[in-house]
Length: 236
Image (cartoon, rainbow, N blue to C red; front, side, top):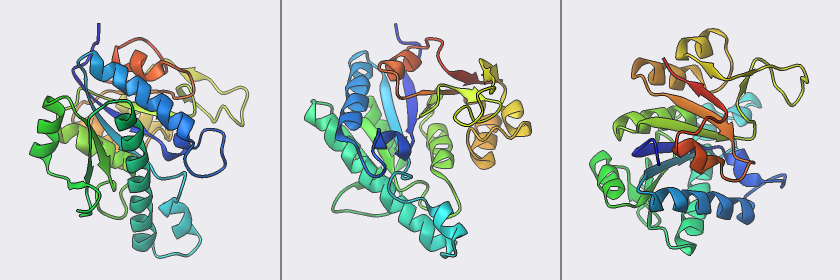
């Protein structure tokens, strides 16, 4: 039995790479699509925000001297490439999907309109929010927090390459300790880098729980949606 009626799934761009060094692994996109299909079949309304780090990361380019606004807009375009790839993977297996972009791209997506997004969800369509917030200086994590608030999602499911939140990077520190649960304030004060401070504050101010879990374990998306205890939960 699903615990939630409407969820927002945040998928990092890096997760779409799979074991590739760059770009999109179609096998990974298909696996994600299949789990989302199972959730939709269970009657759950699913919205998605996807990152663009597998193609272009604006912050990294800015650090190397590129104008930050230009770099961030390039990153938003990268999220649109990922959004279209995920849309295709979903529609190949019979899931009705709409991509809504924060930047007007009439030839390939609908413009983001909150009421339209909610109506698509009510009709059982998966909604993919592309181009972040449409503004530079805001991450796709902030876009996920913003859209979750706007569509009244009950929870943000943050699918990453790590199986939860640790006190240090488990990929470089074998002694890193995993948290089973945290509050939003602990996430901020400990500077745990789950998401940037703007996104974390938005979730805290509006009391939106976050579950951080690994995308690499098959079935985790559906488990998270059903409320099973996986990864780390962040809530008040």
